[in-house]
Image (cartoon, rainbow, N blue to C red):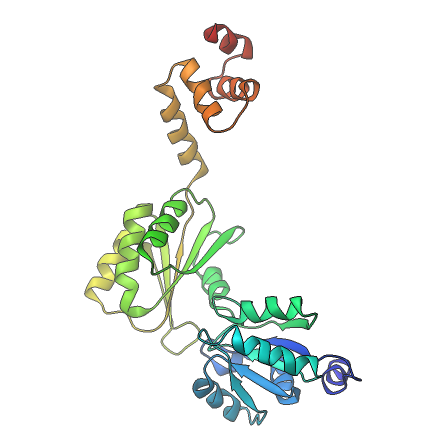
Length: 291
């Protein structure tokens, strides 16, 4: 602790640092002692929403100067902050809730700091996607994080198509007024998979609703959702994908089967080998069918 304090207070003419400070996603008790100390000792706090963050700082009696850093000034303001750090000031970055850089403009500041040779360190803490994953009851070893699905219709459709064959557990953020629409789109694209909808995480009215996408759609059509939501969806079964792939080539002749793999970029030898494996044949039998 003393070592970190000295690092923050004494730069000895060296550039300052950027500290990514995780803040509570609901319950104020979830902030770490290290984050509290750092927020008090840095020279400046860059906040995504200064109006919301001032409440957090006041609660913990933190009086460090604060400035805004958000989606609409993320590049221009980043260079301003970098100039300050190059002069020796230490800056802490906080987001509305959770860990900076996860689904917010902090990732741009981190990238630009690293390009400018500014040291960046992350002070771990609350993160909604991990919190929801661990209480979802779905597999946690492998997962993909999609954050908020894009608003652009074409890009949104492409993402949903990609997720159709995703075998990892999928995590999606959504606002309450868009939850029903997003659940319906996920149901249409992915089928009636198991899903857990987590709302108001760490707060008094936290809910964890384990169902299927279809049942969740019906429930929230009848019960208006409130609070920010995290949707956790089971990945697709590998066995199911393999069965579908098998059905797709069973209707093909052996030459067509080999040609299919060649059209995907395989050379003739590898295409024959894969076709033989699929059909449980020897490469000699596949070769004979091609003559």
